[in-house]
Image (cartoon, rainbow, N blue to C red):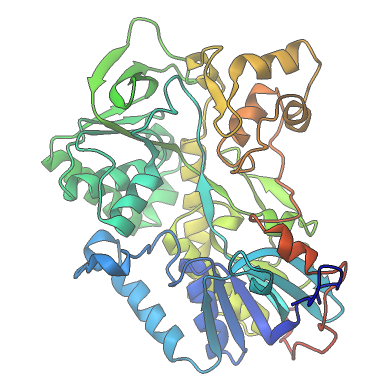
Length: 485
């Protein structure tokens, strides 16, 4: 620390040297870390949460005294086994509460920049010969009138409240949007005692029937879907396909929603509106890969079947950036089973060890199913038909539809970045993660663009001031890393 205001603060020292740094401790990251350690690599697993598991295996807060957290999760024994291996492995180091805000390439690998809190000394830098991104995904939100009312949460947010806080967002909860997360969220909510009058799905599930061979190759997915469907049937939850919540009602809190039928392009059909009383709405339209750490390094991306942007990887899960691998949702959303497989495969690639053919075949089957699932739930272009001029698109900056359309139609904005500069849409706390897809659509962008930002999470100015243009103390080798050729 400086002894006077005029004395410069020393940049943080690089702490620790590893063969592999895995960013994200969800299913993909856990599988990658323990597999890499088993294959002889010194590995560090980094996550912003205090305990491993990610969003999928989110833990109840310790003070709640939950005696059976496994009852809130699907396939909990898989997580328990991986966590036990991680804690016991001498070559695997888990560091919870470590938020990676940037990656920087060095002569012998990467500098991994981390923040652990608000103080200047909470910034650290790790050295790693290779980096594996397993940062997962975040929910896609499409705005509609009333979506800023208290009581409206994301579908994943409702599950997070239940898993982490053992609470429900309401007592009578409508679940809406599109994608398989809706069925999982609804079945979890009814099992916890909530009344779910309807699951409102904008697609119709017929897209799955286009490739029956892909479905037949993953029978466990059919069993899982049937399990969710059976739970909803037992609790008399009505499934409303090809429908959407087009408006939320209430003043201080949600009191009801209006549901309308949709055409094939997701345009609301006049005269089909139905009102459903409720005190909460859990809504989401699938997931989008969290890839900003890689895109800031210039990693190649591709557009997925659902319109989202994922990292482009080769058969060994290598990105276009040398030494940077990717596993799980960052390669395109496909669920926990696929993430586990890709984490294990990526670890083999980093270590230069050929995996078994069975693992490769399983990854191929699950990746094909993921593409089918994404295409079946891709948002239709007509969803903008449920917007009104005063509907907020950017919640953080309170930018309504009218201002975005003004930027496009009157001021000549033809891309999301220009719309952002003219309206501030996407400049708030979430940095466009909530409104980004909607702003891109309203701006008339022909194809989605990859997010690029120099920092993947908020970093205090005091920590940036404590750094330097380069990275201190990373000249030493991070140790040998097996060739993945």
